[in-house]
Amino acid sequence: MYSDHSLCLHYLKDMKWNGWTEIYKYTIPWAIEWIHYYEVYLVNGNKWEGPESPVHFTEFDKNKYEDE
Image 1 (cartoon, one colour):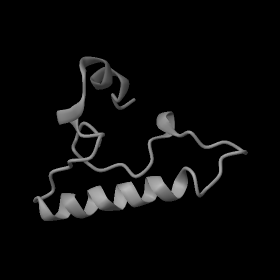
Image 2 (cartoon, rainbow, N blue to C red; image 1 turned 90 degrees about the vertical axis):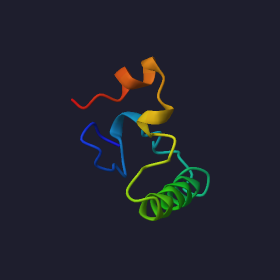
Image 3 (cartoon, one colour; image 1 turned 45 degrees about the vertical axis):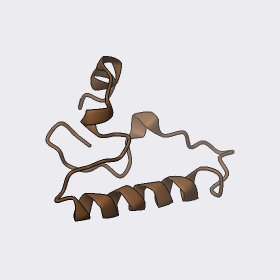
Image 4 (cartoon, rainbow, N blue to C red; image 1 turned 60 degrees about the vertical axis):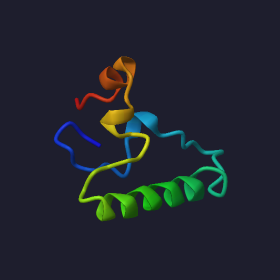
């Protein structure tokens, strides 16, 4: 989630993908998790509950995820 509360499907700085990444180990579980939290987001009136939510951030995380 960006500082303007828009959702982010892909955050480049957190991308763990490389030429050897196996889709079944990374991409599919990540997509399932994101879709789950997106469905919760829609049910909860556009309140993001996923691990990227500012509610879950520590002070370190708040600085780590600043928009550039």
